[in-house]
Image 1: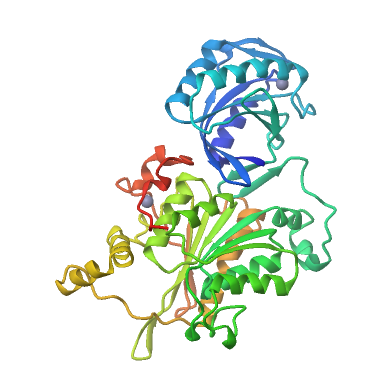
Image 2: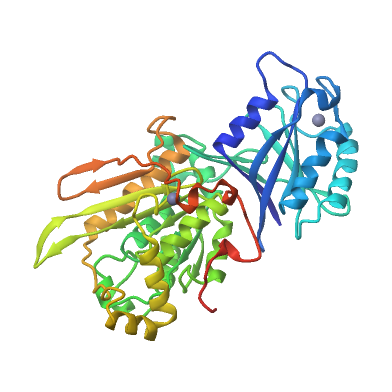
Amino acid sequence: MRYTITFLEKQYQHLVAQLFPAGLRAERAAFLLCGISRTEEETRLIVRETIPVLDSELLEQSSHHLSIAASSFLPVMKRADQENASFVFVHSHPPGVTDHSQQDELEERGLFRTAYNRIDTPNSIHASLVFSDPQLPRGRVWLDGGSYESIDLVRVIGPRFRFYPRGGFDRSIDTSFHDREVRAFGADILPLLKGLTIGVVGAGGTGSSVFEQLVRLGVGRILIADGQDLESSNVSRVYGSAVNDVGMEKSALASRMARQIGLGTVVKHLSKPITYASVMKCFRDCDAIFGCTDDAWGRSVLTRFSIEYCVPVIDLGVKIESKNGKISAIPGRITTLMPGKPCLYCRQQITAEDVQQQILQELSPKEAEQQRRDGYIPELPGAEPAVIPFTTATAAFAVAEFLQRLTGFKGDDYDLGELILRFDETVVRTPGALVDPTCFCSDSSLTAKGDRVRFLDQTWRPE
Ligand SMILES: [Zn+2]
Ligand SMILES: [Zn+2]
């Protein structure tokens, strides 16, 4: 089992400011309340809130030791119990003292025994982190019963995606196939990419192109889902496909392409769409997801997922507006979704009506047909136009946005939520947007919800 923890950037900054105030050298502390995501491979804590420990609640505080009053942690444990949260204790260390001390072990053993007694959150685990430097988080998970396991990775999601693997990046890996990339971004880029699990939702024109780029870049693990089989009209833009493949699952074609490239990418392909809960749940193992689906229901699921699991989603799509062979516009769109950012509803890229109509169509096609006859819902759209340079270029821009979040090559302040590539005008627009206060995404209590009884609190197809 792999243990990890995910912060949003502003939570991480808030925590670091609490632990390392200017000029102070004594140890300081804080608590975190976290949602939890458990899969077969990973147990992930997802930070909901950081709660500082006041200096008045420290019983003993020096550069080497600290002890905290029960009046400080009991109310936090009570909230964890009420809010189905995990409890995390964080403290700072002097520079160079990277790991938990023996004294920490004594203190924490009692603290986490109390946590398991007081917090009744089902399936929960509790954890502790120590920081000897803002860039050196070290953590462990205390299991029920008094043993503990290391936290393997700390993620920070924001303008940049930052990853702190335990023990740092593995510099011993062979870079010969990625020499030009390493020359561009430096030695850490390959171990960083190799350590990531990236999701690709949709294996069509944009999805297959994103997928091939991720494989060639050196991403370690890729999860790809698509419910459709290859049609003859797809071969003109689906990477890895050939005329003889018509009828094969698109996701399996992607998997085959990765094997043929031979860089050792671990690919898991799912031949159903993410509107099945069983499929979407697999994406809880991802560090980031590319949304390459062209349906409103799938996009609404991804929008919700990015908030409840704090997994960033780079959503992309291309529309060719053409009538009788005459093109009026070709916008390619790349939108980055994460908590606190305007979502696809805020940006009016999807609407609740579109999503409802699609759910009706897919779950009760007869009723949808009746409603169409009665004029309540519009006619089904026919096949949309699509052309390979536009799907490929949009995919390339999306992967470049991802590389920016990993490396900061456009500067640390770059944080654009959306790019619109107007191929017909040869311009790139960067529309600003605000979170709509009436949108579901403005409800901060949904951030880092993690696993709950009704996954993402929405309708799913029967499996
Ligand atoms: Zn300590
Ligand atoms: Zn929204």
